[in-house]
Amino acid sequence: MNDKTETATLSSDATEVRAQKLKLLREQIGDVYPAHFHRTMTNAELAAKYEGLEPDTETGDVVTVAGRVYSSRNSGMFMDIHDASAKIQIFSHKDVTGEEARALLPMIDIGDIIGVTGVVRRTKRGELTINAQQITMLTKSLLPMPEKWHGLSDIELRYRKRHLDIMTNEESKLRFQQRSRIVSGIRRFMENDGFMEVETPMLHSVYGGATAEPFKTHHNTLKLDMYLRIAPELFLKRTLVSGLTDKVFEINRNFRNEGVSTRHNPEFTMMECYWAYADYEDIMDLVERLFSTLAMSIHGSTEFAFGDKQISFKGPFRRVPMPDAVKEATGIDFLAIKTDEEARAASKAAGFAVEKDATWGECLAFIFEEKVEGTLIQPAHVTHFPKDISPFAKEVPGEPRLVERFETYCNAWELGNAFSELNDPEEQRARMVEQLEQAHARGEKQKELDEEFLDAIDQGMPPAGGLGIGVDRLIMLLTNSPSIRDIILFPARRNKAD
Image 1 (cartoon, rainbow, N blue to C red):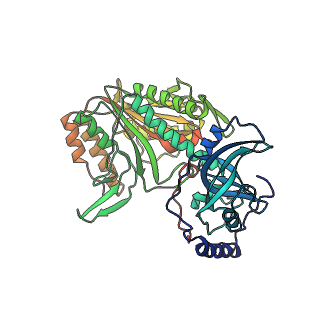
Image 2 (image 1 turned 180 degrees about the vertical axis):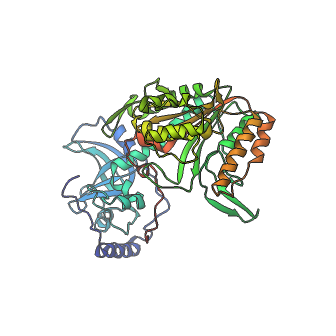
Image 3 (image 1 turned 30 degrees about the vertical axis):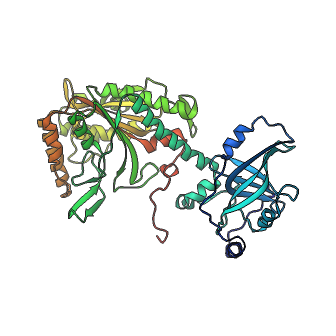
């Protein structure tokens, strides 16, 4: 931006001046916030239409545009206005602009939203410009904008006042435009792959489908305590039982009453899907195709930068069983260990502080998280998880302690979790009862068995592969964003008074 751009400073005087101008405008023109104004094209459409216009050329075409004033020079003779698509320069002069419109110029501040009707031309310097004939005040802004070329330097203020962040930061604006494209891209990919999108309840009377602390609320009419969903899994599986479709998905909002970090927000987006007559290996292929498609959409390539790393979403991804990964990293061969006691002893001997009652599978998973997870920079599918921590997955043939489950990692982050889904109703009930008993032992007395889900499974669910993808983390990777709060439009935050 030109250093001579005039910007109001954030002070009570500047705010008062704007309030005074609003009062004068109401007296002079009446409605300062009109309900109706029709532009003939967006700024981007204007730029595209006249892309080939030569410098120092006037078209004679009259157009109507609108946008927010971002800069004003020479007492308003030149203004830049931005709509959501692009900017356009406005030129106001007695030779082309009516007296009524010129009288409005001193009342226009940076941040105001105006409409302009005039003739399209390109200046000698090559700037596409509208010679203003009429100017309409559409919205008087009562607060000054931050300096556009600096934006908001306070990170917390950027999250709290996201409207100003996007208004003054092109990178932030682009990031949320890319988020929209990624979410739309996921939906298109799934639909093109034959999946049917459904919507399942956000309010659950019994919460399940994952292990997490829920948010609790109360339904006044039903006189029933309810929970914001932590996962849509159990309802989506009931959809498979129904025979409505063999391939179902949902892009869903989930809520987990847990910690906040650069990778965790209590309210987050997932894509969850279930594919009848498929297994976890089919789902691995689906993940690779989806990820590469999204990378191509955003970057035009399956390779892209994240920080100082170069990430490749070109398949096939590396596939490694969890016991093999742990053995490679530590030398501990968990498949040769037979009991929980031996697993705890081997873990402690190698310097890992596992819980005193940790099971064989919990020891394996703990060491994986400590020693392996942080090394998985390029995308990889970690397979063969312990059954101890995977109550909804089928056993690996010949190794009943492991299940057909994988998690997809990249940049040391978990991006997706998938199973060959358990559909044996007796085994499902036994595992859910065991999980419930463990929750009650931890003091989670409010947790209940989801009998409606188990009743549906008793009806018969086809064999299926299931997948949950953390959409927010995937967007972080694809947009080179180090914090989840950078890609959530309005992230969770403390009250200002706190």
